[in-house]
Image (cartoon, rainbow, N blue to C red):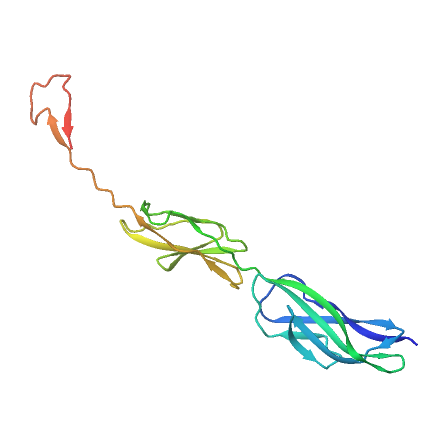
Length: 229
């Protein structure tokens, strides 16, 4: 006599870039023939990276929504176990159970990775009033927010920014950059640096004429003009 039983298959989700919340696990079943045993259903057991997250005695269950929060940039394995009794063709129960298993793997969204500010150098002095600030690339970042003295100065998509306003003479500033994703699902902020703007240039001193003397007369045509600061 032929017996048929279901086994789980096609577990979802798979792939990469999965969100950190609202994980919906789904699966299907396939009917398998066995001539020696049949397997009365007991329960579904759902695992996430080896930890059981759900158990159900509903044989028709084909999905489960996980309410926890996942970790970014992490690989996950879903395991769907169909836990059954095992009986032979004579109806005799075996002293152990049978588990039919299907799995799927996925990876969560990638947060912006670490990066550092590059210029001006930390503690730099004599910096221009409209300096160009630059930094290294952050993997998986989709943009950068530039802060000066804790206030947002600009939002850019590149790895540098030139100020459009004049900073104050002889003044120290602290700056940092925050890498972000467009969905604001994660950020990374580089360690801050400081710099000091150059001093205001002094106006030139008034020169003093040395020769020829004031109101001189009968000056040679080849007279050399002389002055001092």
